[in-house]
Length: 503
Image (tube, rainbow, N blue to C red; front, side):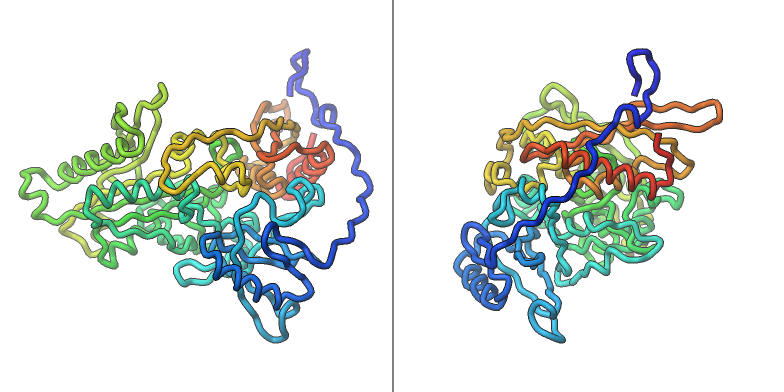
């Protein structure tokens, strides 16, 4: 950072965190904890808890399914929708695994303790052991591995089972259903819908099948989460396109969570949601029109997506921008004039013939589009920060209702951010995405932004970067003790994992 004289100050001069104090003695926890407001969980008698949970689940099917995990002597609710958590035999019985799911209402806290108390105690949400997608079970060891090519942290695995797009009262789910409604109405239910496909795909599915070049930046470990050298967490829903075409589907929509290593700010998050749409045409469809196949598909595509934009945003001005995507040609982006500025809505184009040829559809032509649900939901619902989509705070979740598209979000928090600067000499292998992964791994969603505010190269050819990290909770005020502890941990890990020299 530059001081009043114009010189860059050293990090040690500006950042002086409070010395680490002695840890407070832990409170004695009671034998039973009320999972408010309905279930009494007895950690020493889990069988009784299970039976009570099953009875509650039967009587209250409308609530989200949420598994439980025993954390030390307290059982706490884990906010993973429609997932199964397996407990090891040390908790339930010997030489066996036992699974269960329970139903409780959505709540802003996981137990009778307040959210702020849990954070002050350095409590972190337990990670489920097993998830299930379309009948396929995925264990943590299937995703987070001790493999030199694996770069998936626990924080990303914990998001795999959330499936916000399948929650009818969540903004992402509401938007997905509104798009479904448009296609069902306009195309007489001819589009097949898939929203529970496994996010673990092969490199071939994610890149090769959609003609992403071998040297494309998206293939790098800096941009993609690799489970091993041949397996990734999908970067886009297009990863399922070729397989569905081979299985005979000609009209389909694919919705799901996608994963990309990315920067930290109000519009970027390493997990977000996409929808992919594909329509395949037969030769007699374009031959009857007197148009060539590509022109016919492009015209139909634009007509379809202009109708979708009107369905979501009303009577808005639109324009088409020529674009480039590896899997379509020609390619376009649709922009709408909304709230006095041009907004990119989606990317699309006529599918490359090579993709159809590999799927055994030599005589066909097709169009495809892809859109980011968070991008549109933030505009439609006036949601200012992408982190809010992952909030369980009732002040957020209670504002939205099934089928109510475009309800304007009312901010409930004005908590101030806390800024900390960190400067260091970088090396040749340094990337900003790697820095952001470390910050997210330490601070989670308390990290609001990581911004490069200064850089220079000295006479010896060494380059220095200074980053400003903004910490802010969407739900409460953060303490100086918390922020200093986070910043110390970030500094330690940046130095040890990125091999940089702190200034």
